[in-house]
Length: 260
Ligand SMILES: O=P(O)(O)OC[C@H]1O[C@H](O)[C@H](O)[C@@H](O)[C@@H]1O
Image 1 (tube, rainbow, N blue to C red):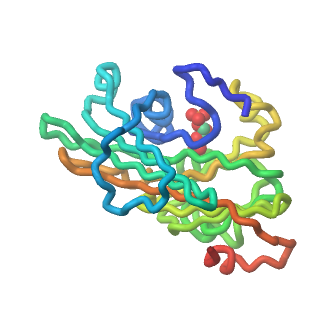
Image 2 (cartoon, rainbow, N blue to C red):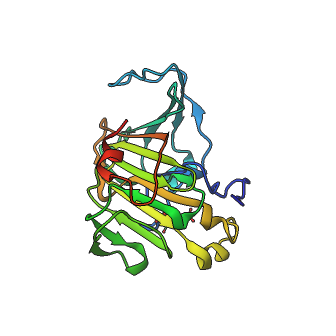
Image 3 (cartoon, rainbow, N blue to C red):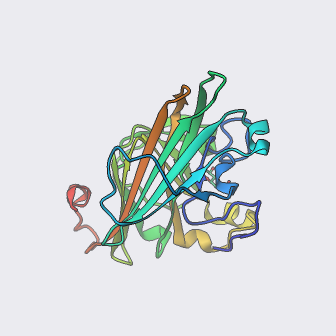
């Protein structure tokens, strides 16, 4: 990606964490400030309710700075565990705790803004979102229902799918590779590709890069999360890449979604 790697701009690509606000759904900068902050290594995280079986992981923590508190007047601990499975699976667990001492709850929206690399966006299908309701970001977030078959791409897409299943698959026909997204605590899924015009308008995005990327973002947007002091929220994302032997017309979507 033709990203800008100099702070305070967010890096385009990878998995930016949108917190405490998704997109412009509130008064903060787009996608909140968490993606623009430096995190610290969390040397002594509280135990996980579900243990991480992988031994390859790092625990990170983000707490608000004095400047952050001026723009979002809340105290929190955002703990992130990044774990790698033996087969290369990536597991991200976010735990966000309200540590306000003034007794006040806070409310946030959240997304793992995952960028996937694909061979050719015109050949890609997303399975698991068909027939669901979505809010169309390109039409003032009006609500529509997805029709028919798996989702394919031939123009700009920016949709928030609602009440999505815990498993979504991105089938890359040309690479014969399927990305499987598993998620927990994250009911929504944003699907974004800026296509040609918007790609050209973005300074940190190459004119043709839209052809080789797709964002499918596990998120909690429609129903914002509210935490009282002492309460904690957890959102988990698991990504794996599996070989797929997709040949036009031979794919049984149920098999892809149920396998592995
Ligand atoms: O350019 P950014 O602030 O990183 O946002 C990139 C994109 O993120 C999400 O996918 C939103 O739904 C899009 O509306 C937005 O354009």
